[in-house]
Image 1 (cartoon, helix red, strand yellow):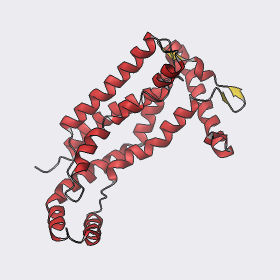
Image 2 (image 1 turned 30 degrees about the vertical axis):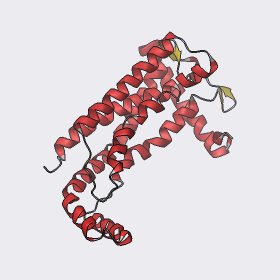
Image 3 (image 1 turned 90 degrees about the vertical axis):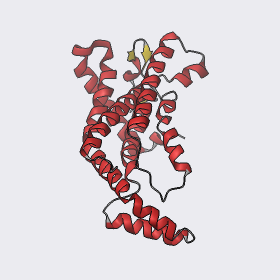
Image 4 (image 1 turned 180 degrees about the horizontal axis):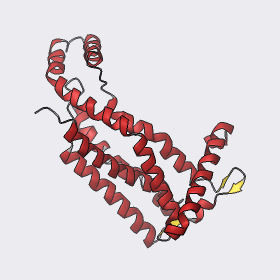
Length: 243
């Protein structure tokens, strides 16, 4: 079932497609054949600028979690035989400090609708009863609506497709590794031990997702990953973790 067949979502898809087409037309005199790809990059940057307050909130929350770590360990030691009381006391501590243990998820959750909409825009050959001409645009010969996994399944993959997607995946994975090495998150003693390793794995999942989504969405993921790394490096200086 196509969720974008429902009238409200169909309207949203149509508006998003029209907006991208208008931006692409505006950029064509400057960027020629890369106009649609540049439009996607600009949309990504606009979204990330709008989410700067969320990033600041995330940095503050991470600093708070690091500062509260000794008190969280004390709570865990005191109430380890009473999980319900431990959870209640932990949430009370976070509440008293005006922080949330889930603040780190906000940037990802906030961007999910945008990535989903981009995915849909470059997945539909027709939008609003008209041919989706965005699918005619490409990056170095690779259509913006093509995914690497989809091309492999259809037997239409070529060297250019491999090269473009491989470049994006390497860039995303490289930035994930830099993030893992330089920006280790504050450890929450109240969280299960396995979550530390899971967080390390999740940093690389974006690279895997990029293989399955249309090239336009993969471009979004690459740019937003680069932005996230740069923003977190700057905010870590502004909100350093206690040693």
